[in-house]
Structure formats: structure tokens, C-alpha cells
Image (tube, rainbow over all chains, first blue to last red; front, side, top):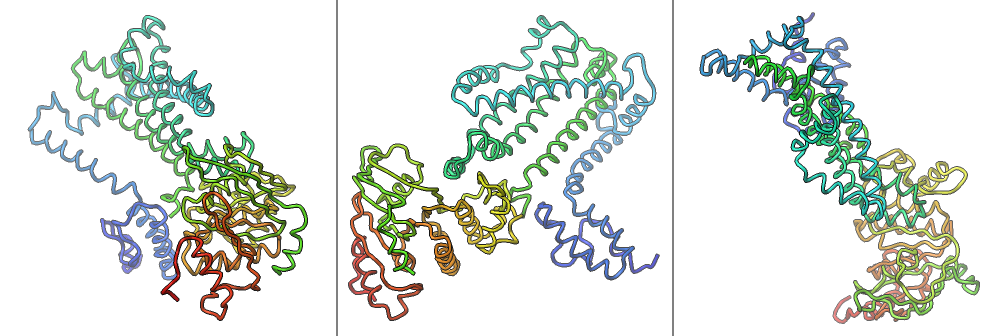
Length: 319
Length: 249
């Protein structure tokens, strides 16, 4: 391994020296710019030293990807947390240090305890509730919003009810749901579904109604059929807002789950939390909260990926 | 060329308008307007802003259902707008073939794009096009429908001077090849005189003035050449629009 290869592997916040003037680490987060810079830089590389280029490209991609700079602040917070614990500024009973949370997580994952079950088992139970609730809520919301968005009759039938539902405090419904649907899975899934449906409905409805009137007029000039107008102009035009609504509703869905799971459950992350509360196990509570956090980020990343694919025509993704 | 096309004006018009009226909030914008557009005729319609040029165009395109009077348009009509109005989530080729009812819409779109010099941009997203390219794509989308009447609503007004000259040539070339009747709304007298067979001035809701342009094409840049006839017409048209030419030139 020749020593002259080193510069391309140098980590750190500044770009590698071979990157040239086009590659600024503080450049806009637009993917295209990065890709172009990387391509230019790696083209130079390949000519010079193919093997080093492969490795250099990977390093550079990591450096310039959007993900890495975003990791900095969470890492700083984590370090601060560990420092506060190690320096005994806060008692471990109130705020367990990250190391303890980690070892608790590992033991929860590797051994099944009578009080909590396994971490994975609880994760699967929670994910299942969110997935079912989300799917039901999203389907209902999309159907209702399209009905209301595309016809005046539909709007009059659906929108007033949805506007009423939206003002209802979601968690105020828990007692009612328990009375109506018992204490099984149904009220929990329904709570998630309702939490998901409201923001998705509102965004989809307004997305449909806010489609550029000039494009609708264009549709008339081009003599599009009603079906063509809806599928080619209206729905694709509403998509950006639908996806924004999707991200919002996933957030609400997880939130609803946390609350729903703390009542009358025997599995799930919320169940872990309520058990841990009884045993005053803050470390377990933190594990559950961090897992919620990670799962929330994961589902959000999935929607963002979807956004990237579906909205590739937008200037921010194109440029 | 102009003379040859004008010889067909005796046949039945592509569009015929009688007593067309339209008011907005009690203010009449079109007031019993009469107009005939012959097949293949290139008409430029000028007028001060708010004079109803676009209202007339929209009525002919069937976009305004609150006009009163008689309006007859025969054959397919196509329209290009001031902003190109490309559907941003459809690639350029798909924009051109959007809503096209023919055996092979994709091939037709390719041919139309080739004609406006955009072959290599067929797969591009509209938001990546320059203003001139977008307007050419919009023209291709109108042309691919093989209209007998092509309505152009100030399609060049947002373009820079050089692009605009190129667009004028392109439009004249397309018109010569496909021979649709053209109604071009513009606020630019020079543009009207450079392109049209007939320049109409819309005043008080009617065609207040009509000028038959007999000078042969190309007429682009006539102000710098020795074209006294067009310069006189220009002064007359500007006077009709309420702009005095005294002390200029």
C-alpha cells in the first residue's frame, strides 16, 4: 500500500485535496452537486490510481453525504450525556448513563425476562400495531380525501365530519375506545389509525385543491378526459403534499402508539415502559424510548426515500 | 408566401365571431366584436393591456363559457400560453404527447420535438429547460395536435431579445410548413408587423383598426432597414394604441 495514497483516505470535515474547487463540504445539500463533484474528482482518481480511487470514493461519499453531518449533533448530545453521568452531576437513578442504557438494551435483547419479555418481541408487537394502524388509517384517509377533493358532493359529505374529528383530542378518545372495543388490540390499532388518518386526509385534500389552476386549464385546452385530468394532472400535482402529510401522520401514529400501549397490554414498547415504571427501572424506560426514536426515524427515512423517487422532477432534486 | 396564403380567404373561415361580448363585474371588455379568421391566415392582435386581447383568445379556445354572441370555430384548435405551462412532473416528450389521440402519440411527439429542435431534451424534466426551450416545447405540444387554428397568447413576451428573434423564425417556419391559421396576441407592435398578414388593434372591446401587411417576409429588424411602408404602419399602429411618435425616430 503506497504511502502516496493517503490523502484520499484522510477523514475529517474538509474535502480531500483531490476533490478540487467544486467540492466544498459546506456546499448545498443538493445531491446532484455532490454527485457531480464526486464524479469529477473520482474521474481524476481513476486515471491516476484505480484501487485508491475505489476506496477514496467511498470515503468521500461518506464525507459528503447528507447523513454524516447530521450525525454530529446527536453524537455531541450523547457525549454530553455520558459526561454528565460520569461526572456525577446527575444521579444514575434519575438519568442512567448511556453505557448503562446500552448494557440494559443488550441484556433485554439477549435474555427474556418475566417482567419485560424480550426487546425484539416488544419491538415486533409495536411495529405490528403501527403497521396495521397506519395501513388502515392511510387507506381510509386517501379514499376520503380523494372523494372530497375531486367532487363538491364528496366535499360536502366528508369534509365537515373530518374537520370535526380533527378537533377531537385524540387521547381523550382512549376511554371511549376501551368502552367500545374492549382492551385488546383493536382500540390500540384504531387509535393509531385515527391519528394517522387526520393529517394525511387534511394534506391530501388541500393538495388536490391547490393544484395549479393553470394546469387544470391546460387540461381543458388539451381536451383531456376527466380521468386523464385526475390521473395525469391532479393527483401527481397533489403528491408533494400527500407525502408531507404521510411523514406527519407517521409521527402522530407513533405518538398514538406510545400512549395506547401503556394501557392493558402484555407486549410492546409501551408495555415495557409501564412495567419499568412500576419497578423504577429508568434504564429500561430509556431503552424503550430510544427504540421508539429509532423506529420513528426509520419510518421517516422510508418516506423520505419514497419522496426522492416520486418527486424526482422537482427542482430541488433535479438541479 | 403571404399573397399565396391570402388567396384562400374566400373559403369558409376557420373561426367566425359575431357580436361577441364579455364583461367582468359590469365592465364590458368585449363589446359586440366581429372577426373572421381565414384558413392559414396569420393574424396579430394588439391592444393596450386590459383591452381584452386574452379574453378574446380564451373565448376562441373555449376556456370562457360566459361570453355572449356567436362564436364558431371549425377544426382542431391548439393554444400556447405566455408561460409555457409544461406539466412539471411529466418529461418533455410526455408533455408533448399529453392527451394526444393518435395511433402513435410518442412518435408524433418525437417528430414535433425534432421540428422545434428539442430532440435531445425529450427525456428532460421541464424544470431543467431554459425559457426558450420550454416555450419551444410548448409550441411542439400545440403543433402536434395539427391545429387548423393556433392561438398564441403572448408566448414570446417573457423571452430575452435574442431568443425571441429565434422564436419568431421558428414560428414562421412552422406556420409555413403546417399552414394553420394563427392568432397571435402580443403587445409588441414590431413583433406583430414582423410576423403577421394582418395586424388588428383591439380598442373599446372591438377590432378598432386593421392593417394588411403586404411587405414580403422576412421582416425581422425592419426598423434598421429601409422599409418606409412598415415604419409608417408602425407609427399608425402606435397612434391607434395611443402612443404618439412625434419627436422620435
